[in-house]
Length: 440
Image (cartoon, rainbow, N blue to C red):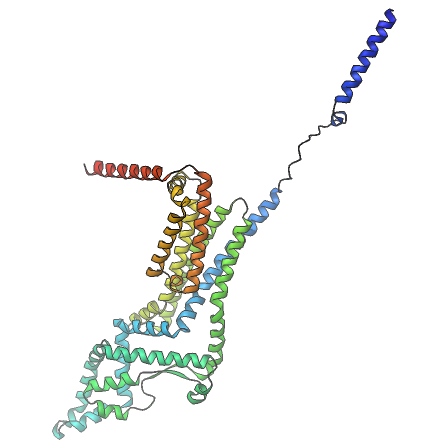
């Protein structure tokens, strides 16, 4: 009986242990724990993340370099291959006192180089005064420079100068575009014909009719392009015609690709793109300054003409300054946008303040429309004065506004306009109080 009880107890114990063993998961018996939850996806290796970051930063560097190279290409294309810009720049050149002085000197020198002014004066002087013609001619040349300089400041002379430059550039573009009859009739040369200004200069002497009739056909002509330079000019024009647009498009595509690859740090990548544009614009201004020193030193054969050469370089590169300055401002705006999306206390406060207004389409898109209209009316950069670039800028602004709307909607879903207005009133009251305390 005792044996039966013992055997019964062992059997019961054995049965209980067997059931317990059956209840234990198989994974425990094999020395590991198996979970019924799905295993998480393997994390991206750190080396892969570093590689992607390196590629993105390299793309930003290359895009910034292309932006810098695009500046002189765009400038030369707009300056050298655009007749309206060429003519406008020529008018600005004549408005400069130093340049106007040199042009006046050139016109007077052309008179004396092509006409015997002394002989012409002797013909109009009384016989007894004829020996004084030489002194009169010398004295006339000394005072003629001032008279012609004043003449060039008048609307009639300025219009003649502008027309001469427009005709010269139109001829230049026809020659570069293939020439045709223009090449055969002009021998492939392009000249700036100042004959009308030369005639006005002769009239200024008081013996215009006599002098003008004796001026040769080549007097007052400045050769802009010689026949042996035609092929080179055509090659340069073909390159410039496409280089500026191609470089700008490539730079934008590389910037976009870098931001796409910057998974997890896109805001920092956007900020890096902004700094890249700032660096490109600053480098463009620096290159202009260095090149200007070299060009002025090379062309200014005397100190007397240095002010005119410096003014010519400054006015002639004004479009380059505009493009470089615009690039810097684009970079500044991008950096500010990246900061506004960041975690700093001030940026977060600004987003909280604007959240209820951005949530309302009438405020968000209405505000964007006002900004766009102001940019079109102001035209602070060349891009804002051209239809296609302006459309591209509008698209970028719209994308930025939509991204900011979504971010503020996630961060501050309960923000109200009243809260924002109260916050602004509090800031205004604090600012007024601070001013009052400082004044006291």
